[in-house]
Image 1 (cartoon, rainbow, N blue to C red):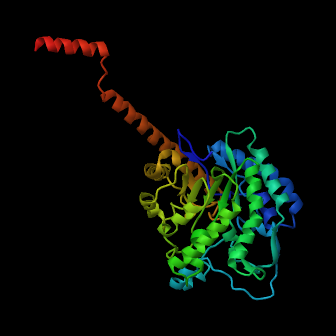
Image 2: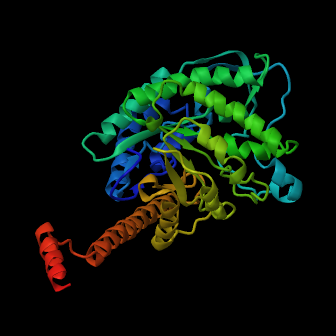
Image 3: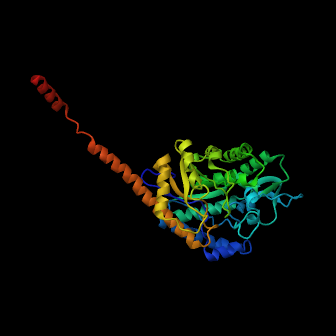
Length: 412
């Protein structure tokens, strides 16, 4: 369910606040692994129920099982990784901004919580394989139990090959293409398992926009070539999966920084649309990118596809007003069609906002804003149709028209 003919559907991009006790176990993981695994199913059931009760239509497990975060969780699901023999340079998600703001980027003010840049660089030292089947089955089972009896659609996020590549060094494969396609072959097993279980698959691919920041030496044409290869690898991993079962999420990185040098949406939107997905989720409420709704004036959304713009965001703790949320949704509805818009978030909220209460408040604003937008969009359509019908002259019967014509002939 990624389209509706009578209202704006509501979803979000990923991570939700763990209960305090579960978070404490996650922070000490794997020390408290047994207790964490025991508590997890109940926590997933509760967070799914809370989403459903709020009015969220497409719900997830809060990404509760991913103790390493939305991208690095696959360290525990891939084989062939270890400590390399050589020293490798770590990629910097703010590398372009660092050229303009060197003191800021190196300061305590450059918040990037749960950063993948912590700790030793993990290296591919032998063929990449997938060993995450058991963990994926557990995620599926927990969500399947949680959504049973609820009028919602479940989705599970999984990370894209290109974003995995960002935090891995390679000492095994001949070149970058062989490396990223090997990651794609491994992750294809996780993607297929989620869809085969009957869930929507969300592919998290911040790599597509934020890789631009990491390679300041690249021109736009060079970066587009770089990104196109990673899109090709992702599509390779999605082979055989129906597009309507896939939602792609992209973002410009969740770091609370300047974002002055983010790549414009205009330069990558066509690459995003190449991904074999039924829905495209992207940042919009982020003030660096809010003006970029204009890309939909020049780029046609492919037939049968939907978009999920982020109409509440992680860049500020301020709770968006529901009417602002509605206005943003109506804007997109007028651009691509109301049935092709899903209300979403810029990114996963919980890991970037300063307190769990704020995540739920933003989601409440999201739901209320979608209701206001739905009321405006569908009422306006109905009102227009009713007005046109009222103004249309009543059709005369054939006999009446004939009698009047005959009468007019006699008069002449």
